[in-house]
Image (tube, rainbow, N blue to C red):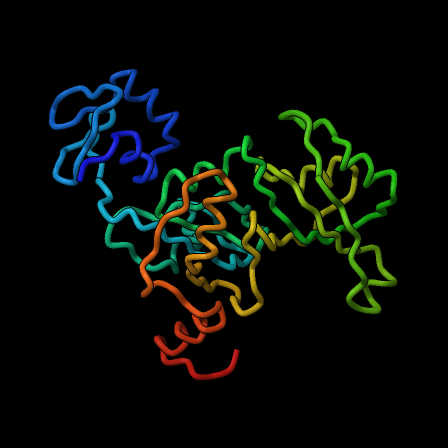
Length: 279
């Protein structure tokens, strides 16, 4: 079954459909040896090339999304020249296509990372125009007052433009040491994902972020049953919620892909690897 060429390329993770339409118009894409034009369609048997490079066509268009609990010390790239562990090392292999990381977390940040094999979904979830909310827990070293919080939510000027948190909420101290010390936890939300944006916002106020964890991305929250360096696959309802968050038509899923709840999926994963201990 043929599909529009830009959709085929987007599903392969090469970019958004709008961006790929520009590639086609610029003559960068060929199908079966002929330069493609807007409106062309492609099938699984076609030979598609971009800038002279062959592209693998994904014929299974059922979207998959993983949530991964990233620990500190892992980098958010497929490979690292320094040999450090990456967030891709423990992911399951795909028969077709590839895993695309939805945003990144720096090496010293832990928490929720989403991965998908659906290129258009990944691009929209990361694009600032869709204002997908990211929520973090940040432990701050230094004095934080109401005036500082107001500046952070009104907007401050960073080297790449104005940035701000949508909300900043102080959290109750978790221990007597925290209550008497200079470290406090704050829950912050922002609607874009510039490089190290959370850290840079706080550092603009002359305080230090000594712990940072992402706890949600759009409608998806990281549950406690997913431990560090573990992943779990989202169920169809969760995947559909991501599609709706970025105005994409939700996919259809077969009944065999429906799980009762996330705890059942976790237990299924533990049984598969022979781990019967309680987590």
